[in-house]
Length: 445
Image 1 (tube, rainbow, N blue to C red):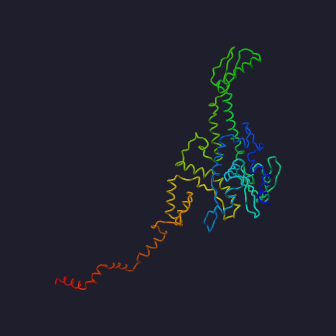
Image 2 (cartoon, rainbow, N blue to C red):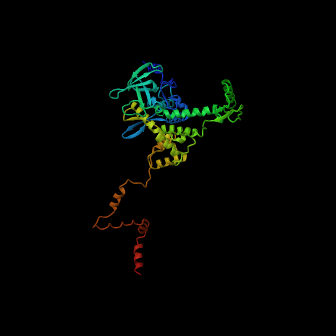
Image 3 (tube, helix red, strand yellow):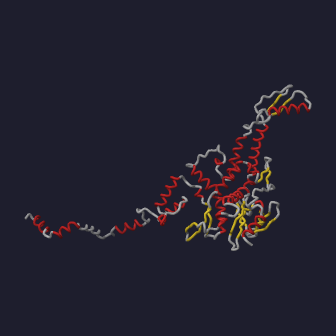
């Protein structure tokens, strides 16, 4: 069976892998105390949830994926041509960005990511597909050798796969459980309150007025008269366009407001708090979700960006790196998301760091040029390493002092004899009588 035939059968068998990711299983829902039902899909209607998930997903998916190997304790990057194709493009139907974005969103919504591994005739991984997490049921094995029951969107079981065929990447897990906890389920009450607050605000501007309350009539109007009075008042004063109109009541009727204003109900504060709580759920700095929150820590945007990478992105990145690296030679080869591409400093700071690295001999010119997406220098001129000439190995200076210092009880060495003047020796050889003449002049004769 050819590889392309197996790909076609795979896409037909499992509907949640590539084409139908957007299909949602509405049966998985949580009824909250606010009365709002929270599902994977409608939780995205809360802007804070959508913003956090898209922020993390876009940040990780946009990073380049590198292939490394360990040789004698040294880390060396693989030539992209010799690296497996799935590292550059996980499957023929998705780009690297699309694939890793779906993996991250699967972790952020369900708390689990399931990757189907399509292998060639030699048993090597040829393609990866992200399965919809709600279509997978984990069959726990006695020794952790779990199997994975995959069904379609109608609930019909399509196959049972072992760990060599399906890679499971869990997020937050508790002891004794194989499946990760869903952040949406754990924060259902917070999300439900946020959705309810948004609905309250929408209905206030749609139906509310500044004169909301009851109409009291001194007499005993008939039901049709009371209904007519109510409908006329609603038609005149309900809605945004009529929110500040002047009310006129006849027949001794009085309007008494009984509802609380949004300020009294802490409406704006509630919405602001729910944004910060969702940001806390995903460990995203609150100022990235709510523009009204100002960040005062750190020395600048670079430090804040580094905090976002270290505390928000790295836990998700390491989970994926360690799991997917099992497809390569264990302990020798692995993949890395290049976070340096996101922490790229300003041009001036970047060039200063390159100068320090080049002058101290731990980066060559070609390695620096590769970081700037430039080709190597011709004639291997960029492969040289440099170091300052005034540096020495620690400890060698003590050895040199001991060699120069005389031992106790010994005479100090004689001072060195200065070398003869070549010009004087040359003159003496040309005029041999000059020495005798100088002596006679010195005797006064």
